[in-house]
Image (cartoon, rainbow, N blue to C red; front, side, top):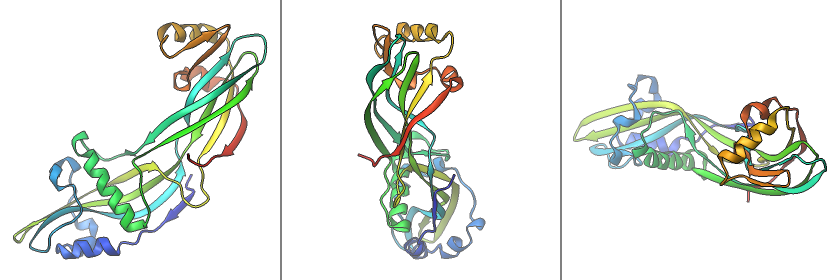
Length: 257
């Protein structure tokens, strides 16, 4: 689901490419040969530098920037009530959501590559870009007997679609290549807000055994006291959590801390 789309201002990037003598390629990117990002030396992951005689760099040619909700992420700690009475407990915590991308980029150049993305976004869209964001929220809820409760985050993600163009020119010898794909990272725009929901699921039949095994296998992360289990929500077994009768208790947009 796309929440918002925006077209980039490519004036400064176009000027940088013309300065290096690559203006025609910028206007007709389909003529540029495709390369793999790992073919670019680490030291060349910088903004375009130099002039038409000597220089190298990477520039973004964005087709569109859009906003959408990212995949739901469990936030902090969950509480399961295996007693026969309702209980009040605090759920939630914090989770760091980071950049994901489809490029074939080795870990040795990922940091430098992100610097290029950040510079391109600032230039093309006049906004800042963060590699990761930490979300933090806590809430005290009443948990019925036989239920688990946790917080679930749906972060607003910024997605860039387009080409990255690598240029190198040394004393008249020119090389240019491109690699295309998408880059996602947390990012809000205008009235868009991340959504945090309280999720409440009936513990399915025979799940007690799975919870017991969870407590035994991961004692460092699981607290057990008088029929109440508290543990990171990410440890909830995917299958029974997915198949359970899950329902929204509340749904509200919360600003990032």
